[in-house]
Amino acid sequence: LHTFANIFADSEDADTTTEDGRLLFYVTKGGTDIVEYLRLSGSNGVVFNEGSEDIDFRIESNDEANMLFVDGGNNRVGIGTNAPDKDLHIRAATSPTLRIQENSQDGYLDLVGLQDSQAQILAKNTSTNEATMLDIDVDADGSGSQSVRFFRNSGTTGSSYVYFLKGDATNTTMALLKSTTGQMSFGTNTIDTNAMITVEGAISLDEISAPS
Image 1 (cartoon, rainbow, N blue to C red):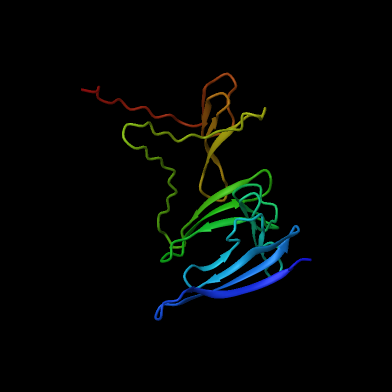
Image 2 (cartoon, helix red, strand yellow; image 1 turned 30 degrees about the vertical axis):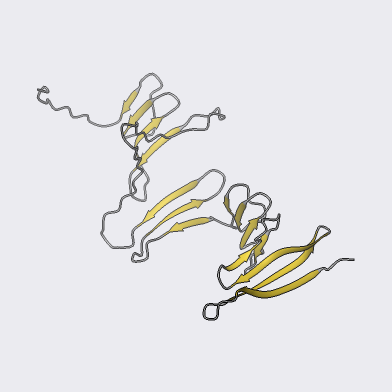
């Protein structure tokens, strides 16, 4: 015989001026009775799964069954998925996007997962003619070294490049680094296989004073 569901209400404290009530919701789970799923507490707010059980939590929206999903067994959160593979996993039909935006600003930072072959970090400034910057910075405490590194996956066998493109509709390559060999090119996306540096265009060299 099981008590398949139970709702319990009581007082958390009996003070005459600051009393708090409590409402607990229990159901049977996996043959075990009185497993708490939800509590409403005057002193601690609304708590789901206070007993730290293997209980999932799901919120459904109009067209998405897993608008928010908490995987209680694996301690992960999914948005658009009920099988999160990382601590936070976001999925969408097209271009899943994480947006960060300051309250007083219209601009924003987007982290966009496009198709398998492309992803994007976008700093968008909506103020006309205002300069925009995207900083990648490191800050080490004391005398610790500080480095910014770009990696290619060591498990791949293909070449790896870092492109610097012209900021217009042409997307013309202004500079290119082939990170697998250390070769570079300027003014072209073609690298001479026999040279470490390839330049298409004029080179200007100016004499400078010797350091004192």
